[in-house]
Length: 251
Image 1: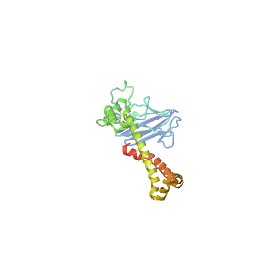
Image 2 (image 1 turned 90 degrees about the horizontal axis):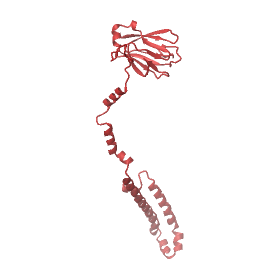
Image 3 (image 1 turned 90 degrees about the vertical axis):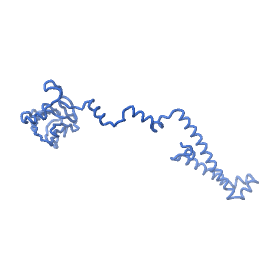
Image 4 (image 1 turned 120 degrees about the vertical axis):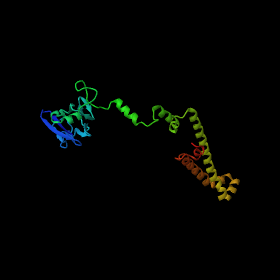
């Protein structure tokens, strides 16, 4: 397959190029373009024309002003014999006089419209075609209705949309957990204070006889126990895994 092209530049001069199967040509105003055109509206690399599986294609290379085929801006499009391409102020078309009848037949539009009556030869992906492709790619059982049912049954849905009764139950459990944690803190404090009875038995005997002596001599255990109990409570309540009571109640 060998296709010849004609390029009309903004100053009405002409450039020619040809394409074979598997080849491509880039058009632009930069030095990297195979067909370099002095057109201020062209990007450095504006578009690419290529032949693949005996079909002719044009692809826009993220140009600033776009690539237009038969009056419509395209991204990637199959081309046919009489399609007219515009890039900037430059026009590109197939040089019909130089190609063989066999190659003409390969790139002749064979759609519903005749050459005279058709408004477009573009094989654009319409909304209907895209929907059809999406339906083919969609796995069985993933309809909108089934998706909604799955979300409702999922744990994520339950956690995100808990009913009022569930919220009240959680609130009660949290209040109970707090009380239990306070009780644990109190136990820690009392445990430290009463440990002095074992460690300092003489102080306890004297304390029973004299309250002032109790205050003066056991204050290390009293205030030390209070400090340790407060630190324990803070660490317990701020634990990432949950406090002791919260884990007990499954919160």
